[in-house]
Structure formats: structure tokens, C-alpha cells
Length: 98
Image (cartoon, rainbow, N blue to C red; front, top):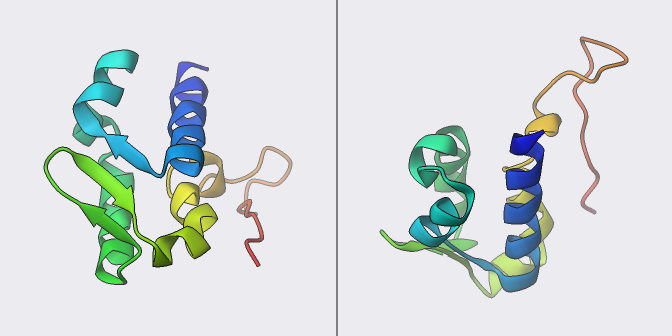
């Protein structure tokens, strides 16, 4: 779906470049970043508090410490991890990070 493409691009950019700029990413995908990813940005607040991410009005950047947990940060944007699997409506999918 379009959402899958948007999220895959964001996760790939995050994993490779470790920085996301809201306006640029939104313009490329014809979306308002803070509205489209409202839930995910709320999740990132805990990550920022832990010193894994630095953010400002332009975007966010993974910190040196955050590189160790980069996969955990990227998982915030994977909507399949918070959705029940197609095989079992009661089981949430997850990915092991360690």
C-alpha cells in the first residue's frame, strides 16, 4: 500500500542516514509529517528522553548512543508491529533486536 511505501522509505532513511527532516520527507511523499506520524512522534518522546534521539522543529537525528538502538527506534514507524497479525487476530508481531 502507499502507507507501506512511505514507512519503508522512512525506515530505510533512518537506518542508513540516521536523520529525518520533516518538511523534506513530507514533500516527497505528499503528506504533513507531524500529522501522518502523530502516534510515532509521541513514541519518540520516550526515546528522546533516554538520549537516543535529538529533535528540533526541522527533524530528528539519532545520537551516538542511539546508534546502538537504531533498530528499536526504527520499529516505532513499523505499523505492523502494533497491529495483530493476519494469522491470529490476538497476537502482535514483533522483531527481536538483541
